[in-house]
Amino acid sequence: MKKFVAMLLCLMMVVALCACGESGSLDDALNNSAKEDVIDGSAGLAMGTGGDSGTYYAVGGVICKVVGDKTGLDLTAVATGGSADNLQNMGLVYQLATVQSDVMTYAYNGTNTFAESGKLDNFRVLCALYAETVQIVTLDPSIKSVADLKGKSVCVGDQGSGTYYNTVDVLAAYGMTIDDIKPVYQSFADSTESLQDGKIDAAFLCAGAPTPAVSTLDSAKPIYLVSIDDEHMAKLLDACPYYASYTIPAGTYESFKEDTQTVTVKATLICSANLSDDCAYKLVSAIFENKDAITELHAKGAELDLTFATDGIAVPFHAGAAQYFAEQGITVATK
Image (tube, rainbow, N blue to C red; front, side, top):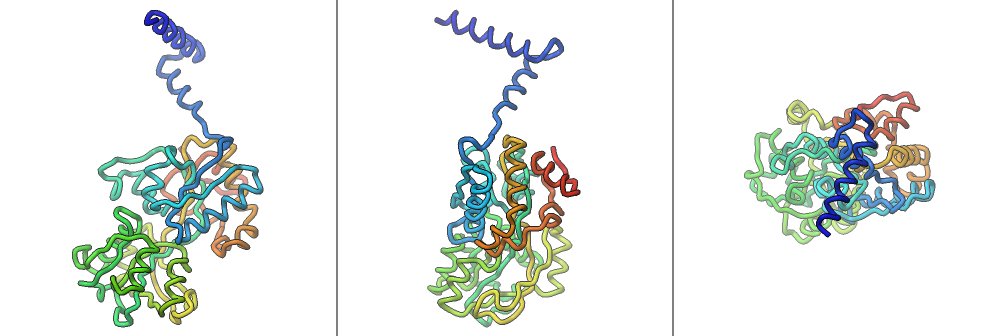
């Protein structure tokens, strides 16, 4: 039996070498074999999103429905721990995912959340979807500035989440660190529940506004959103150029009557690097060619825009997505 197995392995290696041509090598054969592990969507595609009370999950569900109906692909939105979880499980559990643009950059470069585990090169960008807003929510009207959070109990998102690093960045602009507050690590839904119960003083959230968890809180008690003033906004943007200044309009939440100045990153749709070019092309084209249908089911669909989808992205796009954008006259970087 051992001799038979050895002979079989040898035969397989010879066949692989022959398939590479006369100038091929065993390494070439192995690389070609790895490339054959292509995801074409025939077995269905799972999309990692975020908590089931967040915008990621809601928008992901809508995209799965609309794109699935138009393309025939079997797409399923899955509630997850958010950006870091989605990236760490890309290709293992999820074939698609929504992530913060800053967090995916950390993953690709092996920094911040991914400094210890190392950089990830197993994912590619399909498109940016909408502006993801850093929201500082409180029920205490005396908290008018980020500086007022000093010594307060503040939810900073899940451990290692994108929201955690957003918190660190915003505090740093005010000359503060995480040690200047009493950090609490919770999901969106748990943090708004803790606010309502008086267990925390404020919460950072990074999600498209309006965020379902915040809207639910707003229906129970009046909320306040904390602005980032001009001076500290300039410091934040200088230190962290992947943010953009953004104003949350008055009326976004029913009880809040003032515009709020804050920052955004991009909610970005990524995929496994092994997704087939054809499947990636179908996904991206179906999203932009069915913007109206997506918007009917979720207001964030109105933010779909070809320029926004491609500008300022520091991670390579999937070749299939690049093909679609090229047809629209837009060139994006691939690998």
